[in-house]
Length: 183
Ligand code: 5GP
Image 1 (cartoon, protein in one colour):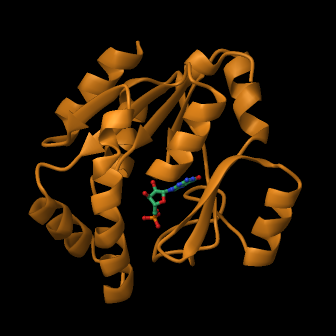
Image 2 (cartoon, rainbow, N blue to C red; image 1 turned 180 degrees about the vertical axis):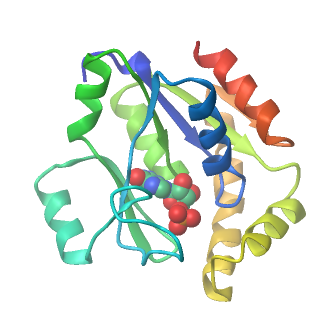
């Protein structure tokens, strides 16, 4: 990687609002590019292949792991998720900053490879609020909700390992705080 300082990781438990905050950031700064991840999870209603994720079969995902095509990858709530490496170098080379919106294990992998990246951990106001957010978005079945909540305890206990820890009370305010950190 040419300039890992231009790589920004937004991590934190599922349901904390990473995706919404990142969308707000992209609206405010056009020179930031969001990496599109690959996953073996089935698309949710309204999600598009190549826009929200690259939706892959497990076989294809494992092929990509074997061919070292991921910057990082992790298993999360019964599915694989990974960051394809190909576009990132190109975007950084042409002057963009690149955001990775990923879960904690993948974030740690990137930090080990490139300690200069900026890693920001989002925390919910509290665990009850996290559960409320996951349930209210109505995208996951009960099994997946419970897996995500169980994982959240481990994830939140990892927040201390990151450069910046922000409580996500309000999307717009959190987006501004992140922009201040990265610009
Ligand atoms: P969801 O199924 O809700 O879209 O994503 C589940 C979790 O996987 C979220 O915490 C999300 O940030 C994370 N995730 C999405 N893409 C990636 C990726 O490329 N790598 C890793 N490690 N996690 C990802």
